[in-house]
Image (tube, rainbow, N blue to C red):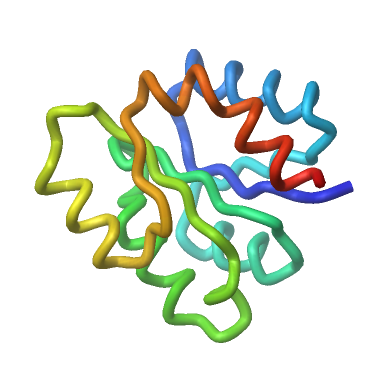
Length: 119
């Protein structure tokens, strides 16, 4: 089973992500610290999903750490945030997010994203 690392502490949204992962047949590993995210990703992950508005953890710093670590640099990153945060989206891309999408688009398309990982 493919693994997806999640950096999201918004419980309401995390439930949506967990449900999509279950339906797509991927294992979701929730991380609440930078070190946990790097360690879980280096242990084998098909993708990292980052809530760029995470209040408890700087997801942009997580993106930067994952891209700079040779063990995790190859893992695709998808970040999501409010659609009006163009500066934060640009910062996430610069830090290493391969794909940055609006929270609403991620919410409606997360199952399809996870199906790609599972394939």
